[in-house]
Amino acid sequence: MLLSIVQTINSYLSDYVLIILLLGIGIWYSIRTGFVQIRYFGEGMKKTFGQLSLSGKKHSSGMTSFQALATAIAAQVGTGNIVGASGAILTGGPGAIFWMWIIAFFGMATIYAEATLAQITRTTLDDGSIHGGPVYYITRAFKGGFGKFLASFFAVAIIVALGFFGCMVQSNSIGSTIQNAFGIPSWIVGIILVIICGAIFLGDVKRLASVTEKVVPVMACIFLIGGLVVLIVRIRYIPETFGLIFRYAFHPEAIIGGGFGYALKTAVSQGAKRGLFSNEAGMGSTPHAHALAHVATPHDQGVVAMIGVFIDTFVVLTLNALVIISTLYTSDGILAGGVIPDYIGKANLAQTAFGTVFGEKLGAMFIAVCLFFFAFSTILSWNLFGKINMIWLFGKKSSVIYTLIALVFIFLGTLTSSDLVWELSDMFNQLMVIPNAIALFALTALVVASAKSAADKK
Image 1 (cartoon, rainbow, N blue to C red):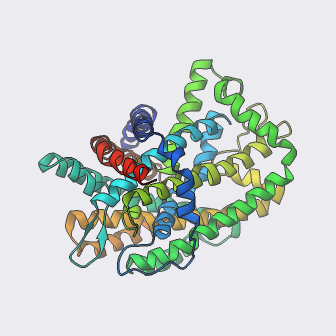
Image 2: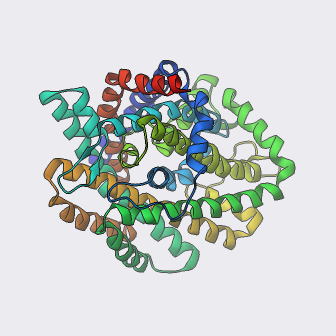
Image 3: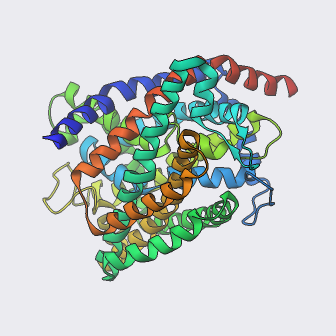
């Protein structure tokens, strides 16, 4: 009964409310900032990679700009980039990827706004630590009881969605894939995860930053190298692959069945919601990391944040999609024509795709390793985001209790998988978007002023 209710709520939120809300914000900020994602893309790349280091400058509090970006990307690049993209393609056809690109393009403007506001409204606590995120700019946008209510609603939603249920879902992906690929019991994986995560959680933000700035580039390189190997082997199918993406973006009924209207709605909605929850633009999660960056102006971190969405969607997610389509959907693939065998699902689609080139066993191992890095880094970032909100709600002493509860959820995730847990995680994940989106609209003037100030200095 409860599962059915939660699924119904999620369906309405994801198919209607959030797509309209988040796409609306992206278009709104693209127009109001003069398409900041185009005008400042080069600057963002330069600020991100111009002084790239795997051992960033140490600060008494907060992070370097790259460490903040790495922490944000760690949250963005999770199992959704593999499993989420697979589900979008299976349900919405190869054309769903085109709509992911559209969503990500506008999402770059949204995340510029989030990161800029997080920098403007961040605060320094009594112990010298820097905190920032939606709860701080929500209460800046709305004074008094209404602002407090919206911020508290957001804080509770993100603690439950990411800090507890979200980390449980990620650890479940780690435990199951490691067990399937290497035969290591998932409960052993759970114990190891708890020990490693506990050591990082109980440290300060500098310890987490030191880990993410090393893990994120390594995990990205491993996945990129593996994906490029597959694409090189399948290079003669690349033109056909892009042809399938663009053809089925506008005529999806030819591959997923049904009437034109139904098929197009499915392709767009799958691409939109999978894209939104892959790059997290507008969700209110990554601003917590960007608020911690030591930069000269809020605009500086805003343009860096845009590169996070670009890396997540246009690099990592797209590479996975190209591998899947070029190996399974092209003329010699097992999914050519859209007929999906019973043994194929979103959980094993990527393994099957990589397995066509690497071999079944090596393909499963490769995806298991990548999923471990993706999910592990996501757990680290999501825990931090939840902790910041826990401290905002209940004070500094609550962080230890929060950490212990989070570790229990992480371990439980490796022991069992529950449809209700997945659905509850999605529900709270989606609910936290609403107060964040309201505040983003309300604080448009601050973001526009930041972008204009940067333009005036040119």
